Length: 274
Image (cartoon, rainbow, N blue to C red; front, side, top):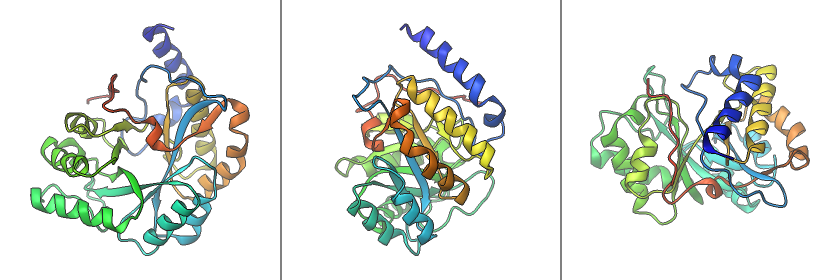
């Protein structure tokens, strides 16, 4: 299928599943065009599901670990249960990421171990190193918040240089700002990278979450290596526990996030640069 036709289909899918929801998302643009389709595996089209914000609530973290084979957990550093949950996830064969806190433009507190715009290069590197030490078995990194700092090339370059100095770490842009340059800086530093396409829970509303999950499935069925991010909210976990067991029957196979990053991406995803 020609690239133009594929993007026309993707837009059509979004118009059906998510137009009312995407406009209400709290973290910036919620639609991005897709790279060339990946080859379908016998189990279905590969897609990744990342559960963010793991570490503060132990019970919710344990539920997230047990969701489904192929799921990825992104763990906040320096949280009460982050290290233990990362170890447990690794033991269960789940891929672990560092959910690196970063400064937001609305002034919200990103939590301990965050990167801030007023940090110099040495502080950025030290903060990243300490955060990685706090989350054992981290295979990659994505940003927690970060709608301010991900817009700044210098700080993102320092981050990516630190990741590039460590073997096999990838970066996924959570895309909390349409003006993020994080993925571009990852490209320039040779860090394997990808970008979030769908937020499952832009609002803690069961109906919205169900609509976003259907959007995730529909896009995944197109074969573009879709990455969704959700959070360990009771509403999200309830839906995923019900729906994920039937995902393969719908032609979608969950894979670790590391399987959907490129080295470097040959067709960089573009976002709304407002």
